[in-house]
Image (cartoon, rainbow, N blue to C red; front, top):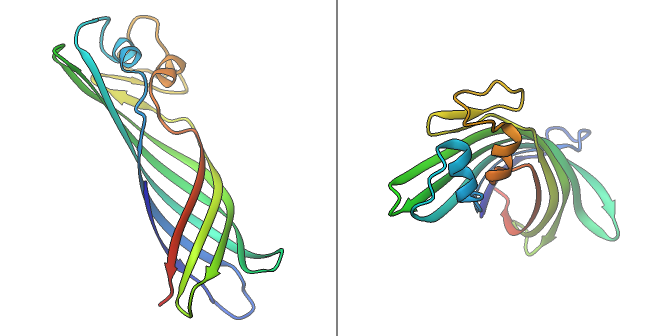
Length: 183
């Protein structure tokens, strides 16, 4: 994956909190193609399955400085997340190619450490977790919702069946090694 952030600091000398807006793109496992086809389309068994998935995630964090060992720039962070999942399932020779999409709101937090390289350039180490709340999944002409407000569900399938078939984000551990440039 790849992530880009913009951060604003030094609001006032007496206000140590910083704000960060981020966007990331991650290639993920879309899920189990045969199960996704059964839950969202039909019980066909022909074709060779292929799948790919991706997540666009937007974050808004507040960072607060903490004293951690002898590190001068260590911060705990937390904030809001919005995640957009899209999984594509293709059955080569089976004439089926469909997308399953979902959008999720959530919360995230962790620890971020800056290691100065020079006056404007830092190496950044970041680790944390995101928790994303369940959201409606839509694919083909079917959608499943956590509250049971399903549209055109197949057989007796429900949200938990769809959730098990699709690799949408839920609890995301995140680790990043990157660089920061100060303007």
